[in-house]
Amino acid sequence: MEHFIWSMDPIAFSFGSVRVFWYGILFAIAILSGLEFMKWVYKRERKDVESLDTLFLYIVIGIVLGARLGHCFFYEPDFYLAHPMKIFAIWEGGLASHGGGLGVIIALYLYVKKYHLNYLWLLDRVAIPTALFGFFVRMGNFMNSEIVGTPSDFPLAIVFTRVDALPRHPAQLYEAFSYLAIFIALTLLYRAKAKKLHNGFLFGLFLVLIFSVRFLVEFVKTKQADYDTAFLHMSTGQALSIPFLILGIFLMFWSFKKAQV
Image (spheres, rainbow, N blue to C red):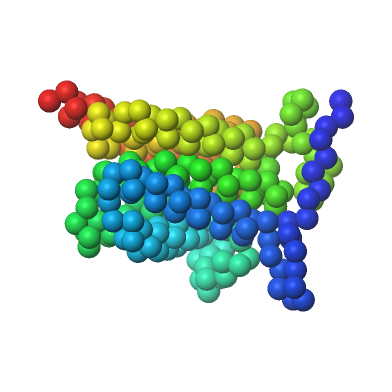
């Protein structure tokens, strides 16, 4: 069986010694798309749109710091503990979605404490474009031929020539299009039921859907951590997904019960 060959150069274009990567372009599109979505939400709910500039500063800092520290200490702790200055070398790559998610949760908590907003109300709204953010980031991973899947003869398998000559599961695409579907589903639910849903339900549903996908795709993903995870024979990504899944289930149950009161 012949498989699709993927040999895309991760560099989109360059000016002299300055190189612009597809990953960076897609990351920027993800941020701008999220900003535009939140502008729509704020206008729809008659909130102060100008305050979004500060909100997104918090979010971007939370994503970058959380994702970088998450990669360093969740996936390659031995290396970064031995070379701590390398933690700051973010241009060399290495971002973890679990760390980025945790970073955003913390950043939004700091934001609402300062600006006196309802924490769960904001998490519900920010969760929706975060799913779209995940789509663009995984497409960036695809352009980089990174986070590839395990070798397979599956008809949808792809040969990533920058990795090797083996057909592999396109794990990045499995995640990317799942996240896009989750974004569409959450948007439709928000438009139809936002006023009826208790604060926390959308964020809980987001956590359950996103990290269920992440848990399942890990079965066909190559090893990402530089150590073995002994916890119930799970990968590091699966083990890290469990707390988010539990939190999501709890929030959905809690908000549903609150809505019944």
